[in-house]
Image (cartoon, rainbow, N blue to C red; front, side, top):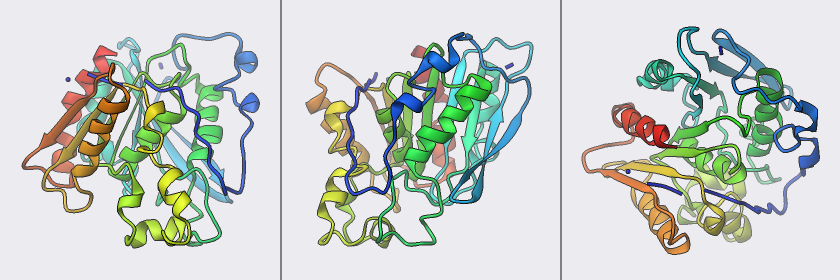
Length: 293
């Protein structure tokens, strides 16, 4: 069967991409193809699906709730860059606790995706095989909606992520403010232009000097801050040596400036690093945050 925040109405234009989408063909934005809206997902047991991107199959695991538990909502849980997508279940208590509360948990495998909306001629070819955010929105979310009635606007839906998946969670919330009630973002970066010499981003966007517009505007949450309105729990470890906590503080401070009537939770753990010990410690706080919305 099957603490404060921020919402988003977004207009996010990505220039220089290879493809475009037509929202009229998307079941998530056009309910004519699903006129009878049900209040609960159509799923009775844990299920695994496989969807293609560029000829490669990518797995998504759906963790169902027990028959004895009332459905409360669905949580989309995103992994870190090249991390196992089921780590949220295997390395934290998220899935166990969410199930007890009545939440379905959806765990897609995005591999080495940075949740960019598209790839470019300069993108490393061995990285361009992993799904983009456009594929995520147009294919994965649409399939989950049409086949399982998941992520319908009439339901309570949440998104959380860690590291690169944290940025992905914020970007997906930005893209889909009518679908997601709240977000949880841990150990993420929000403005790639702060990392001009990082091979990680150069491998996706090309050099900063040559493609400044991509770095500063595409997939950049600070650039899109005025459109970000989804209630969000923001967490980061102060001893994070992979992604500095200043990124999360900057995003929170920017929201305070550009969304003065909205509030977000900011939690900087002074002892935490970039690891599952920290991410697991935030599960209860994030679930409590979701429970309010």
